[in-house]
Image 1 (tube, rainbow, N blue to C red):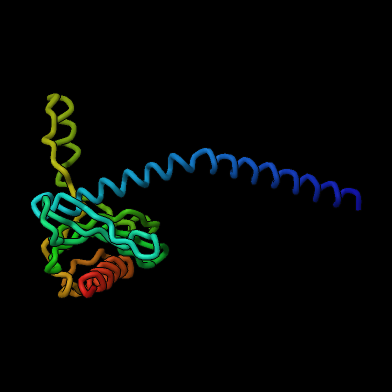
Image 2: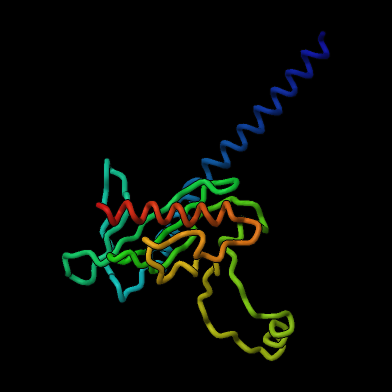
Length: 200
């Protein structure tokens, strides 16, 4: 009986120390994580809405929470578009996307903010395709050739640009092979949230 009590006490002590360390690490890193998430959202805001459509964002709040942003051009009081966050559960996680949309429902850009889908399948919603090969990469290194600065966007979300939200459907999107559930979750979340905003 003494051995069982001793083992239980040691196990309790180890768990207590591990939990304390994890809690400490969480509280130390939380401000950095929140600051990083804020930077990601700010950059995504700029990426999904081109300056040609609008250069001024005003948050629309409900119950003290930002529901979406209205996009204005200069001092024009009429909004030219909207930026919103769409969320839906995919295959194994909530997929959160930031979407830019013109007033007529045309999508100007989509960026996935967070997802924890299956690596190699659903996680490919953020995959960037490149035509660069190992040989061309090695040539660039040895010839000290600097590659041209070009912003690459994930091929899956890149399909949405210029599409009308009213006509969005998984049938007219090139879904990710083996990850139809994740693909459909992104499409459905964007469409339902976008139509909800346009209906207001």
